[in-house]
Image 1 (spheres, rainbow over the protein chains, first blue to last red):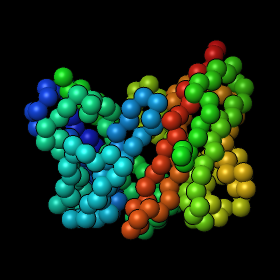
Image 2 (cartoon, rainbow over the protein chains, first blue to last red):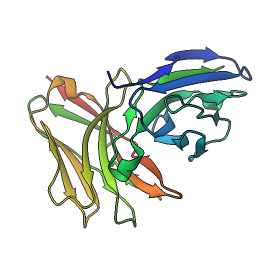
Image 3 (cartoon, each protein chain N blue to C red):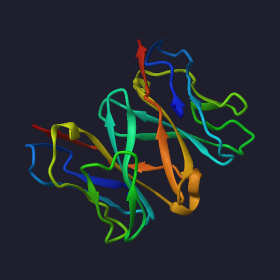
Image 4 (cartoon, each protein chain N blue to C red):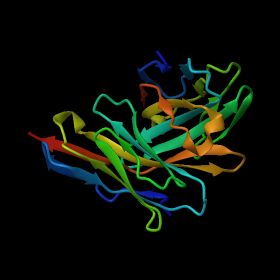
Length: 115
Length: 117
């Protein structure tokens, strides 16, 4: 089944404790992206990747890191989480060559709480 | 300035009625894509329908159709014969090229639709 898999789905952590949210897709998509969703704000892009070893900042990159060492994986790293990073996080992917026509396939979401 | 505006924070609709969810957008690009996603209470994001800026026909997918008025920059979602399972948040989004081909998806704030039995 074609899908984007995120883990963990739920996480409660404390300020400053490094964590990684994994994302893996099995559709051979070039484009991958991380979004956070907060009430009333819709989804905002954190980072994106056009292909292996190519990543760039989205609209709200502060406090986050990513890497793209393999095409299928795009982990999101919070080096020192803070309470304002409490949010619902989505990983998504699409075929890059479809450009603006490509619909994103989303993971199930990861709900993160930072105390 | 808001690039995607959904003016209806919430809507109540009687089961079996048709419902229109409003979306207006702002872009100076000629090439862009418009999408609607559904987010049920379980949280996942489900792709519903797509409309390309150059598409002359309104998109349809089963009970979903997109009322695309390019000159007015609106892309309203129409759900015919609503069902209880349609209760969810609905997001309008636009994909355009930003910078060096970042096909970013820009989102509206969403409309919470509740279908009454």
